[in-house]
Length: 293
Image (cartoon, rainbow, N blue to C red; front, side, top):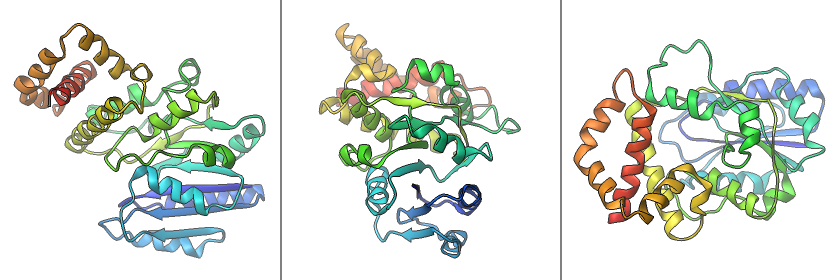
């Protein structure tokens, strides 16, 4: 029936797995939960407790595979026909989380449940959290309008045969855009991504400096995908804008803006009141800066 697959890195997955285990046991379905540690640099003792749960398995890798390869490896050892992928730093909002997916999947190949953030969080001035609340926590109606570009790999279920056909492309080990590329492949092959209201809370909110560094690394990945024709520029808003300003021969100017204003950009984005429009401009200028190299 259901294989629940969770890649992790330096994160305690035990509360998440216990929640899922209780839900699956209550449903009386055939299930397994596999957590795979991508060669963490920190020892998380709680993850070792997973082996004490029935139908649960914890696997620690001796080398780092990266975000795409570890998901492919999880799928390769899964034994059931439906694969539910979850990030390690999430938690189902509903006690009927698994039931909602099971009630939906019989008529669909791929289903995305959505991402949300806890309403009582105290760091709403955080750039990372502000980005999550405004750009990732998208309503079902908005996701239905853009079913491919609003997809992420943090919370989705699909048929094993679909994953076996496509999987995650192991083109790089840098951070970012593996889920964007996966969704693009599905779109190109006319595989529909369905959306339902079955979100998880995203709990692992990084600090602003870490988030900024990851954002720049992800743009390096995006530049690589674009330059090697692995991703159509029309698939994301930032690449659409980049192509437009490139046609207008303005990308060198935007690259220069990044070089000259980088300290001011970052001072603002690390402040108590970051503006996401400034963040968008910062990212766009950095992408243009990369293309100049």
